[in-house]
Image 1 (cartoon, rainbow, N blue to C red):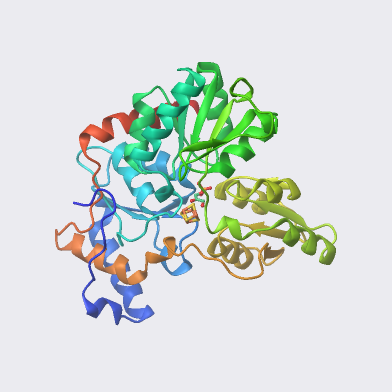
Image 2: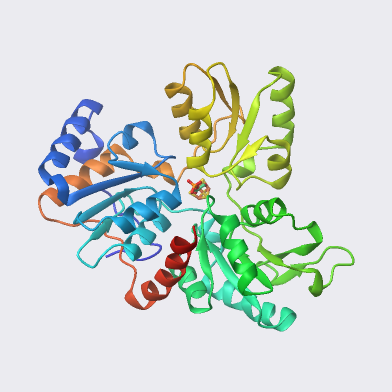
Length: 367
Ligand code: 13P
Ligand code: SF4
């Protein structure tokens, strides 16, 4: 069973030789044979050749909720990344098993916070601000960090509910420690009306705060971990301006993992599910620039030929870890299940899962 940081051992070579026609036929056959015992969940960043086999798709929040609601599937095959599969394992029943087709499908942002670093930060937060801080972890984090929050009266949030969760936290404490994504935290706090000087960055590499000139601890309402998504770092305000010059009237919509100057230059920001909903609701003839992972942008462009849909960054930037999930790995995982062999199970140890579930349940109750 895989918990964290497991490395994918190679899958049999024969799978890597399959043609699209072969893997299509074999995945379809395995799905039919497993029937209701199987549920395939797919995140919006998955490649078309994988997501076409998902029974249900969504952003991180929707997928967590779908996993929590399902009590019938014996196997939940997660076409997404490791933290999403861990979340599904925590929220599903003991009779259900969660499978990640490639164990190397991690998240570089989630890897930017580990328990020792967070504990070290927490000590400094207590010394600097007293004990009135609520820890909030973005769902893009290891289960053990969700447990850290659950044990200390905190919660998990996703890009679709960060504002509601911060609101809740401010009712329960004086300030928030938000990790691991500095940008989601900053974008959410500023959208709620907080001022720059109410936010301070904690640099986990130097184990110290990056104070603004003249800023004091009494000013601070949100402590932001210095983590980021390498995919969303590729978007720049200059790209927004260049497209506005080229396409007057263009709508720019970006993910909140983008830097604040990009979000400020855009017209709208939100989770992948929100981005999709805005494109679907827009009238024909609308021109869009989208600042998020390119598999989703290309899919939306294909699905909505009545609109002009462009990537905000003209140089393609897929999430390499999401892309680890291939039709070969999916075929292998499903055919193994069909034979009764559970491969790549993601299983969070009970001592961690209990507390992580508390933080996730808090989110599900609020959002
Ligand atoms: P969403 O929850 O908006 O789908 O985002 C997940 C993610 O990893 C974004 O990089
Ligand atoms: Fe992680 Fe960024 Fe990939 Fe999302 S897009 S899974 S935050 S590396």
